[in-house]
Picture 1 (cartoon, rainbow, N blue to C red):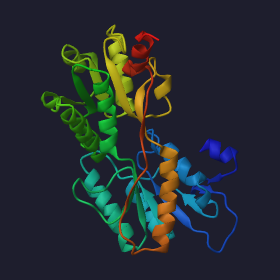
Picture 2 (cartoon, helix red, strand yellow):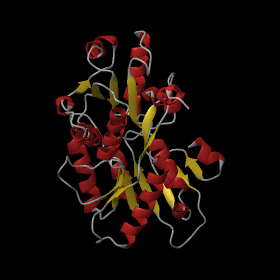
Picture 3 (cartoon, rainbow, N blue to C red):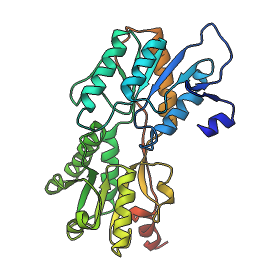
Picture 4 (cartoon, one colour):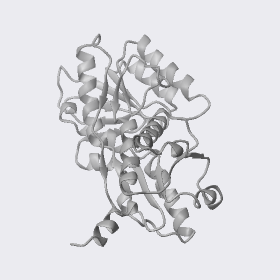
Length: 311
């Protein structure tokens, strides 16, 4: 947000919110950003930057709160009669599903279009009535796992924090499909959901595994720290692949091989989807999936293998 303000693209008004600067236009609209995990989940800040910096956003304004609860912010957007809302559903918590459903139902009652970011409101295979913009998380899990399989990893486990977020479940499905496609059926249940990643919670996994797929880069960074504290060498002793390619992935002690989630492009696609939805409110519901791809760095050992091969 500081970068956008410095460039003159946004303006923060105390007690009101943050707005995209725009030239006055009779066609200008104000859209709301309802991102409960902004600042705690790394992907949403670059997605928001992508929305704000989209060429299609130039004559429009974006509004979001900084301290209100999701339900309070929802009420403010309804009162202000925003033209549409970008909503990233709450991922976890005992009342997450009920809160998410209540929020979208309130927007529906007010006839305010909603574009979902990253994940659906309802658990799979249920599908709501709103467009979704994100990546194919199942494919992301497949790409990460297949890369380790091609590097001849002997036994691969997937590590995730204990959550049943739809994005994580889709990545787990991709993990299993990659193993099945390589005839590794015996490993499809090697999925470990941990409350915390510590010496105690991972030590039992080190005897049988030589490679790990992590459900996201934050998990990968925590696992890498524990493994290095235990004296393990990455990638000689353990190969690792993450998912998301957040900004610090290349800055970890061992730069992380990961599946890149193109957050800025997701933001741009979300703005395009919003303008189309406003223009055609009765258009069919869509999943708009932006391409993800593998970024190979040191943590998987591919570069070491390349150096060992004769010229």
